[in-house]
Image 1 (cartoon, rainbow, N blue to C red):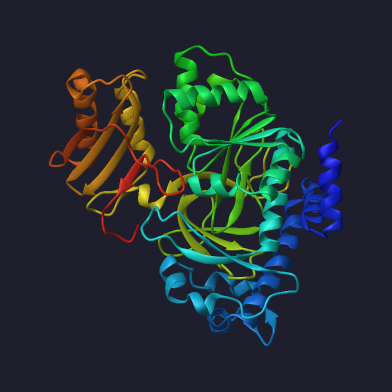
Image 2: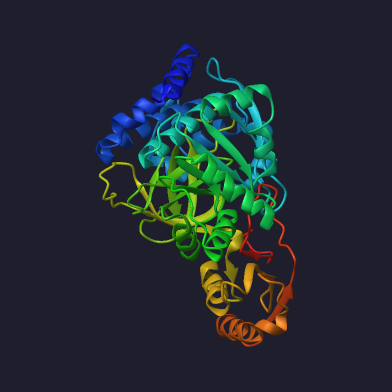
Length: 457
């Protein structure tokens, strides 16, 4: 008997926490028509716009200038005229973006992005936004077959998140109640990997929620040593893009599907795969997602820049936020029958794209696949490809068994030759053997980095 679910629901009910109502709403509409779901989304979008127009100096002027809000009335036909919100604008207009007043019982807290593209971005969110994101996560877990109160394990790569999620009596009680086990993976060596493997097999979680790159390292150890693993219902992936070769290794190690999830600290839950893995179901009641080309024209079924509006953060409205990710949004629906709109694919961070002198943008997977096909599994443990300039690329390699560069020379020549074919024969390809590639502040491994001073950054 899952007594934890009953206790959690009781506590949330007496706290008048919106998590329960939001969860019920999501479950009641998941198989409704896309048009019905869109009508609910647009209601929340209009409410947000009125709030932003009424309570922020920045959006009061911007929304009037665009004809989106006039005399307290919203005209969504002009929504695409709102200029994209960028990180530079947020830093410059921080005070003018913060709401002067909030609906009753909303409390503000400060948050920040990881700073992988430079200085960390500081912003503000509220507790209602936070609770509705929790409801969305519970819904996604239920969608995969893991109910509230059943065992879950978070194998987490951010030190700050790990400490916040494990320290203090209140947090420890919540982890006990939610049946949640935290395990750190921000620092990995063979001894820690073995400890994590043993803990998975001992605890037997219904679902594992993890930083994908660190889980890939763990999975490679499992495969190399032929270790039999406990099977959860799924591996729920976060932090960075799930590349196909990473997914393949993890699924082979555990024998269960890897479910890709897209979100950010600024926006919370944006989209998540279901068991069909036929695209990412957009969390329509939390975020409004658009994709635009280089001329700011909205597009479908073609890759462009994400513009995302956070519908429920009233503390500091993010409207048409240019997060720095690229992807494809589609008008098709998923085979599962759910009516939520779909992101067809996610390309990754803009700062992970490489650029040719003529302005052509190159997908990071192009270079990642070159590395993966050149080296064997027992040769290279981790790698990072850095575009220093149009004519210089640095490749850092962490060897699997202490191999020096001379021992993997055929692979190095193959990589150099293939990259030169893409970037030009005058491009210098440098290789550097390193013992460790640092993670970002929030525990992410960046496979590719573009250091060019372009509008991509």
